[in-house]
Length: 65
Image 1 (tube, rainbow, N blue to C red):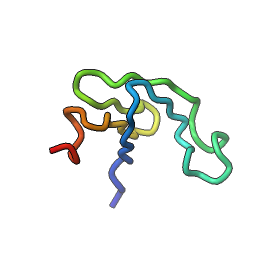
Image 2: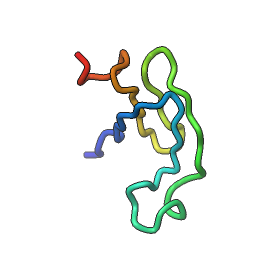
Image 3: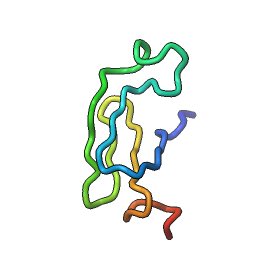
């Protein structure tokens, strides 16, 4: 069984992802760094690694409910 994509809560509408922030060895084991914008849905997903970035307090934030 595969794990669901990682969800990261953020305070910023603009986020970067390199797929390796939590991997020892860093970006050499991830993917090219991309910059993503969180839209009116309150989240965005990385096209490389499927990480989901959720704006704290936004419409997609489960903790805000």
